[in-house]
Amino acid sequence: MKNLRTALSLAAILAIAGTGAALADGPAIGANAPSFQLTTIDGKPFSLADAEKSNKAVVLMFIATKCPYSNAYNDRMRQMAADYSKKGILFVGINSNNTEPEAEVKDHAQKNKWDFTVVKDPGNKVADLYDAKRTPEVFVVGPDGKLLYHGRIDENYEEPAKVTSPDLKNALDQILSGQSVAKTETKAFGCTIKRA
Image 1: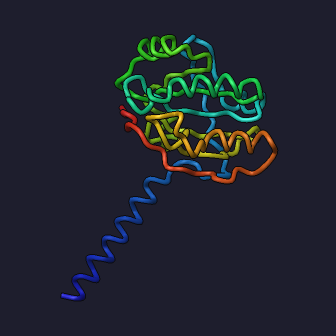
Image 2 (image 1 turned 90 degrees about the horizontal axis):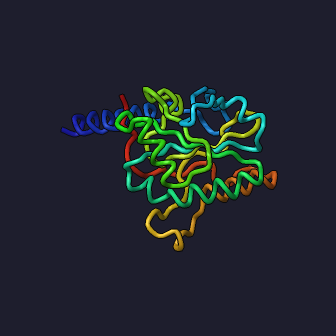
């Protein structure tokens, strides 16, 4: 019986380890961020490689039109994009949900008065490259193409005034001041990306 328990425990540990490995298929902090090209909802070409060269950082935000968690951050995303664009940081919203057509994504961006770049990710190819799982989920890429931060915007989607850990803001401020990002990874939460 003891051997059976040990064998089951070992199997459980291996299963958990295997799951962890499967979840960590995206780029690691400090690794090259996967490059991609998409078309914006306004019909313009967008290239991450070009964006990296012309900005101090690029914030990739996986977003949704229907997810209440993502929608809770609509105002914060708009404000942060406006504030940081003046400092040389580009925000890019990426919609990878196969259940949300491009026309809906465009309408959603217009209703929320988003001035930042928004792209549709057909077949969730970019989400797969980054192993993005949630909306909202954020990846920050430096001008050298390296991944500098991955995770959440902050810890409180319900009440912006009660945020105590503005993780994305902290990371961007550290990048702008020439420091290393102190907290490079946080746990993103939200709706799952609806893959094709």
